[in-house]
Image (cartoon, rainbow, N blue to C red; front, side):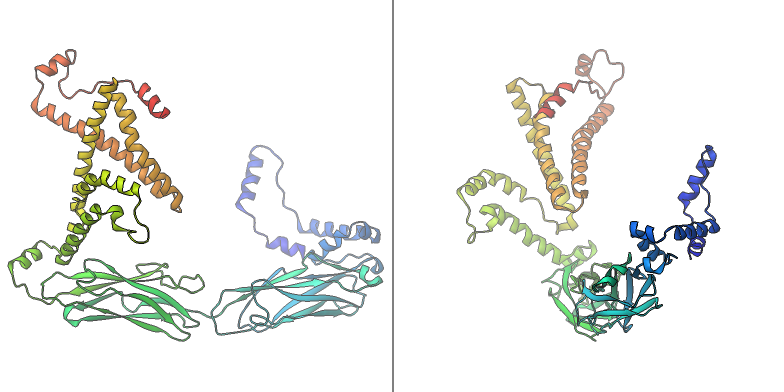
Length: 525
């Protein structure tokens, strides 16, 4: 048997690498063990372990039990050893009973018994399998016997369940010393569920509806199986179509009982008199409650985590006035313009209210909140000017934000220069300490929060690199670029020649300096 196992053994790449390396450097080669040698060694070991060796080394009996070999020692000196053939067994739920073989090696002349009993791991007695216990009787000369455990087949989808069958010795008297358990004293049985709950998906990859139809019906189908109960949540998400202006937002839960294969979601479409471009919104399925298993198709927009479908609303209204014609030509969404207007007004309202108007009843503002509000009120009103992201697809917010950052940067720069002048510090020292601290500390804390709250450090690293890019590329690169273009186009003047009399090349000049002191102060702070 050992020879057959060795013949079937496949060598790994590591074996051949070690063998080649040893041959290359003149080391002792790794030799293949011949099957005849293995058989001789086993026979020699078996013959060498007589009854006295059994008493001194009872573990040898267990080793022989694993190998499936029997020692030819005298029968009176050898115990009967009981062992399972495998430590793990799997069976389909609809496979009926599971039969576990118990093998006896060693002394086969005894008339003896070995006890067994089932033990739950994740499976429940009576619900997933029938509990059994008792004894297996081995008559003289009998080498094996079987334990039969019934498996319960139901129609409910469930995770794979496990239970264990254990052997034990419970005989007393002289015969107990002649019995032993082998290396595999228990076997773990896995019940593989054969019910398929199926996967959820929309019946179409996309839906199109005319505005005058007033509703759209989406069908969610259950493919690949309908066993057991399955549920998921659904909700709508704005695209170019706006909830409340183009359609009525919905959300809820779809529940599929055992055997059900489809459900529908009905969404109301708002028919107005304005001529608009085609608009879209999404319907998303998420949060399946199917014992943690993904129940959505992996090849759709949401992958295995969710299911996403896009609904397109086509306008069937005619263009009736010049305003609609201009909006149509410029590809401007009138509903988004109205939403942006409402959000813009809301920004100013929140800026005027303490804590943005939140917690007026449950958590009233404290004195400190009022003091901080009135100190920051000019800044709140100033930054409320920034347009909301709903306007012009966010481009207006982007450029206005950049402009406001530039204004704040100029104010901070002038204040830092005045502070350095009062304290007698050069501009370079002031910039690398106070200004840099003021811009770097918020980024440092933001990166720390991102690293703590996110499962990965992506947001933290992105925040650090993005901050440095803005500070270096925009803060230094952009002014230097503008200055270089200015001096190249306009040329030098007498003031330039007086400041740089030793320069042979005309243009924008940046004098080299020593940042050692400034960096030391910055690190110390």
